[in-house]
Length: 378
Image 1: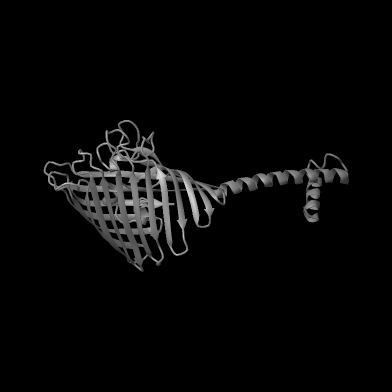
Image 2: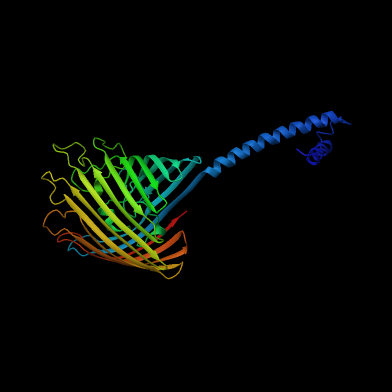
């Protein structure tokens, strides 16, 4: 402590009631009191620095979206979908233990109410520790999103067009899809990177891919799965990626014969000025054990051009085609065209509107109509 501060403290003590206890306090006593104050101040500063450091290494974020659907069912006698729903409320919590080790978590509430008889769910979508091995390599272990598709990686509402997530990635991949295990990532200087992961697998007792996500809730782990993704971002605005996911037994050792399954997914995104385009293709191939009823092959694709007039307004069109029973000659293909607009009052807040026109197989529900939504991220 410098002399000016020391003499100031001595004067303050002398002028205080505490200092006035003795009519003429000695210099030695004043020095003792200053020393005591210095020690207290240093202790408080140490505590404050420690708390500040912890707080600066812990981050909180999240996203959410509210949807209004007004969709008419074109199937005779079918029920319309007219609803308003807080579809998702999500909180992120992250913490950096040090410069090379961090925790990332994601907690989600779907449809507001969860519990018996309620429409919603409470889910932990991510909870993993990530380690930087060097500036270009990292590894992680825990519960994480599988590295496949576009939406599965980035699905915050301000980052994509359309009120609802696209039906191809939802029904074929199926996003959002997370598993538990370990993963490795390597980023190279030429824009090339790859991911390798060993993790828990699907449990598709009836070959319903979307319904086979176990969500790491006491998941059956008789058969694990493997994922490998190759990605290239060597040209500004361009992203090319391909993923192969192999399920060693999608029936998780519950059938007489193991049913292996392979997902091949490839996609591209490209942005040049105000124009962007997304395109994706995904295909499952399952070993047919004689009960698949066409579900041994499931595939879909979409293409989505968009145009952003400025930082506030953008429009898009998307054509989707998917078939969860493509392995036979039956008509089981869905088609859907979406046209819409997005308004960003802030870059992290979006208001959306779109119109969808759907074509479904004979005898299946077919929904046409409008969707409105508002979403945010922070």
